[in-house]
Structure formats: structure tokens, C-alpha cells
Image 1 (cartoon, helix red, strand yellow):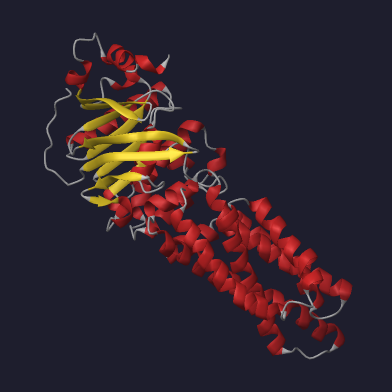
Image 2 (tube, helix red, strand yellow):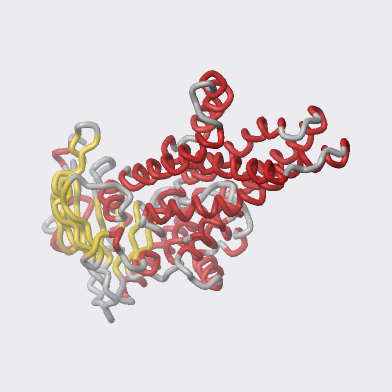
Length: 190
Length: 246
């Protein structure tokens, strides 16, 4: 099932365009801002779009009906989809996380903080999974992307003092949202 | 021609019993029940909105019924050990994402069931899509999308084929192909269940007939039994569903 879901992701042109644009934008912003980790704040948008697309693309052309008739065990199917998504996202997140620091290393000679790279990679991967779960719940790409961008760029700065660290929030909310998405995915009419 | 007997049963009995489905306070299925057997083409007929698609979606595990059962070989769809090799489903549209190629769509379905890649070329050839396999589904005509859906359903060479309005959007050549093909499937001992609102198109294809109207089964039996004293299936259909205000 994971192979099927990987095959789906890989054969969707939007996968490659989204990830390529995100990386390109991140590199460009690094030059503009010239501070190692700041562009990642904006590159998060690319990973949100990617995550939401991964699940909402099922609802184009009635593909969800094909998916659920060939893989009727829905919780397993969704778990396979999230696993496949993580497999594709990790290297992309790593590339984005590395791109900023390696440019500042080359231009300014600032050493690369590998712990920070690892943290950014994990952060972007979890963010993608959360986005995918939101996509499952909303079944609508624009609504999902809009909601998540709103949370991240509008609500989060306001709530910042009440919330724990971004990373902690994500580590807690990812499994919760994945489970909620699986419960809804299992129970709802396709 | 409509009395062909199963050569060898591969299993694939569909048993639907007492299905009730409500949507928005309205009862769209009010105790639907019938059987479809191997070696026969069963036509599931009724006017638009009668509950044909809802019944098939429940049978395929896509929607949930409020009560009743829909079983394939005695188990609900979701518990089939090997769904792709047991049931092939053709619902409306292509069932494929428009930005994928036809071949890429078949590839992920084949992978989901561990089918060999050679099956992809076989089903493409079978439905006549070999030349269009590398094109994106969004560029397909309506008929090509339908043929891709049929190819997808046939990947696992299943013992049961379930088709919702399979003749919609097909040109006369396509209709002829589908009819001949479905008869052939039944002759080899497989189960074919298809829904339609086109009576005239079906009389030559089906062995058994189930008629649904307003979420209730109003007639079921062999083609001869349901046609009864009427001139043809179409007349019988209108007589049976005359209460539907058409």
C-alpha cells in the first residue's frame, strides 16, 4: 500500500512543482535576507501546500473512489499515504533546511549548525503531515491551505505567548490531528 | 441468448439485503435487497435518483448504510481478503486524477494489489487505450475516461464486475464493445452487475433484472419474468415505475 501511495505522489506533477518552487524560493530569500534560518519561515507555506495537496488530490476526478475500492481498509490506506508522504518530504525538507545555512556558509563564512538543520527538517516534515491531515478533514485544497496559512501567519503570532515553542506545539498536534483525520476518514461516506 | 449458464463458478455472489440509507432526513433507500449470481449479467434498472448509485456505493464500501447488509461472497466489501482480484468497479467518470497519465493511474492501482506491471499493458490493449496511455487523463475524452475506468476495474481480473451506468458517454462502437465484453465475462462464469436507466440498451445484454424506484425494489427476476406480458423490457419498466410521476 505504501508503494501504491508513493507511486501516486511521484506521478503527480504538482508534487515536483511545489517542492521545486519551495526550494527555489528558499534559496532566493536566503540571498535577499542573508540570514540563515529566516527564509524557512516563508518556505513553510510550500510544505503546507504540498501536504494539503497530497490528500486533497484524491478528490479530483473521483480518484478517492478508486483508492477506497482498491484499498478498502481505510485506516491502513491513510497510514500508508502519510508514510509515503513522510518518505518524500524528509529529503525535500532536509534540502530546504540545508540550503539557507550552506549559502550563508559560502557567502559569509558562518558555520552550519547541524542541530538546527535537523530541527528545521523535522519541523517541516511534521508540518507537512499536519497539513495532510487537515486536507483529509476539509477535502478542499484552497480551504485547507487558507486555514493553515491563517493559523501559521496570523493566529500563531498572536497566540505566541500562550503557546509553547512552535516545535513542541507541532510534536503534540501532529499525532492528534493524524488520529482525528483517520477516525473521520474511516467513518465518512467517500 | 440470455440463458447462458455458468461454465465454472469462480465465486462472486452478491447478496444485498434490507439496505436503508437516509440523507438529509430523506430516505433514499428503503430496504433494498436482491442477488446477483455468477455466470449472469444482472441489470439494476431504475429512473435517475431511484437509488441505483447509492446501492452500488454501499456495496463497494464507499458509503455506509443505516441498516441492512451488502455482501460479496458472504463478506462486506471492506473485509474482502483481496479486493482488486475479487471485485472490479466502474463508477461515473474516470476515477483518475486529471494530471496523471493513464498508465501512471493504472500503475498505482496495480501496485496496491501487487499485480505484475505486465497487466497494465494487457488491460490497456483490452480497452483500446494503448496509444493514449502516456497522455494525461485531463486530455481524455469522456469515452476514453470511461475506458480507463474499465481498464482499472479489470487489472485484477476479478470474479465480480460492478458498473454504474457503463454505457453513459460511449459512442455506438463503445456501447457495442461493452455489451459484448460483459456477455463474455458472464459466459466465463463471472458475475456482472450493472446499473442503467436506459432500458432499450440493456434488453439484449442482461439475464436477470432488478428494478428500483424511489428506493424500493419493484421487480426482480429473469428478463422474461420481469418483462412478463409486456411487449418489451421498456414497456414493463414504465408500467412498474408509473407511480414515479413521469
